[in-house]
Image 1 (cartoon, helix red, strand yellow):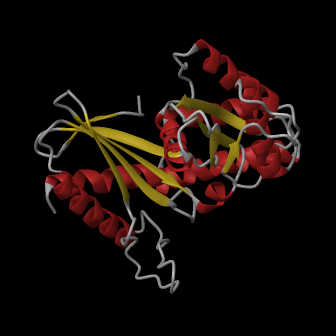
Image 2: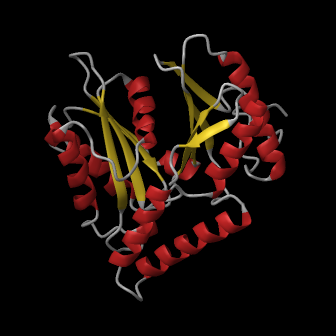
Image 3: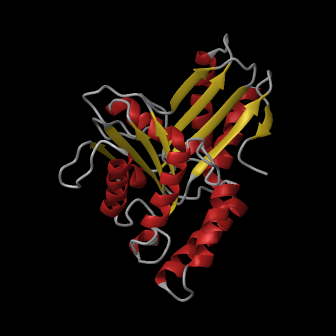
Length: 294
């Protein structure tokens, strides 16, 4: 195995088995908020125990190791085809070692070849930038949380949601309400305001690359993110829908230009098993730095 494949294999292992520091802290904080002896508190305790066991045993945090999504920021001249081949081989090796479950099936036949590799699997997004640095971020997104994602077109008469930030707020909260704890809550929202139907959903997932404790550079969006979390946590849905004060751990909102005729709000939902990790790579392909760990 070459250095790049080796690095990607370790990236997959750590992403699958270890919760990032910012997510772990948010889970610990939510455990403190829940009333002791309640179902919500017990659910959060089980989640915390699951996190510790997965890390100590280097085993997947969840049996659904999810869609495998790589985000690569790279300089001009970077060999994207070589990276994609290395990523496929690393995914095969990770699956064989048990870091990934055999989750990817043929959409027509339902056949599972046991490799997690096929059309669209893994997913690789490469973006060129001016820096000579190569950074690779990985998100593992489970099917349960993917199923409760939503996309709204404004205006929405039923929700009295107009084409403004208040209308966006209404549909985002409606998506949380409709989920009702499904998708393995407490959840994290990635939201895109604008774009078309495809780019909106894709950009909403890019919001999961942000840390939970960061601040949106747009003051209006920062205020909206905080309001969404605070309001959702007053709905009483709670962990796994058992009731309680922790329905969301975070909400991250991005914006894309749109056509005047369209106003989409795309909402991706991430489960509490928020598997996101990243590295910068040396020219040899070896890991230089981990991006989401202290």
